[in-house]
Length: 113
Length: 114
Image 1 (tube, one colour):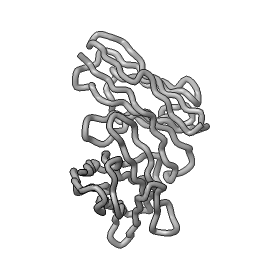
Image 2 (cartoon, rainbow over the protein chains, first blue to last red; image 1 turned 180 degrees about the vertical axis):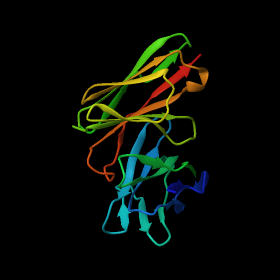
Image 3 (tube, one colour; image 1 turned 120 degrees about the vertical axis):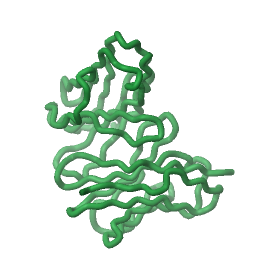
Image 4 (cartoon, helix red, strand yellow; image 1 turned 90 degrees about the horizontal axis):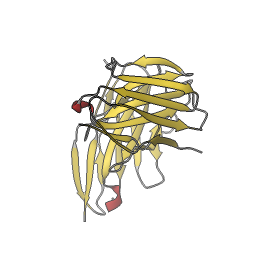
């Protein structure tokens, strides 16, 4: 069976501290991986994606994620968080069988001043 | 234009009302989606349109009726809703032709059913 797991439902972290949000998937076929962010009362915005090639992908606002095939993971990291990073983060996976996305349950990141 | 727009932003309706949600994109995407999202939960897929034809219906109750009048527009007609249908309704679009295509989301319509 194919699934997406975000183990941490809530992650509080102090401002300027590093953070890692975990995402694991299970699949027997090739996957495409995405991280979306949702700020309060807004829609989802793409943060970064892994399609192929370099396993480390970066976003313009300092986040990065590394695709690890052997551990079936796509964890999101940021070395120093800001108050403005407070949001809900969703990992999403799609498979070659169609256009559908499968979302993880989300991680609520709260940055504490 | 890389934006998906949705109207209205907020909607309050009674259980006997009929209303419609609208979604528009001008990115030339030929796949469009409706999602339902409850607070602190991930989006749940409701419908997928490919080339203006309904390709996926995730067993959504018939009180939700989607419509895709052209390649840029997507509507969701609502009738006889229940209070548990209160949620954020998100529209998204993407290119067709591969699961690697990211989905672009609109800001959503916050629906409250009284």
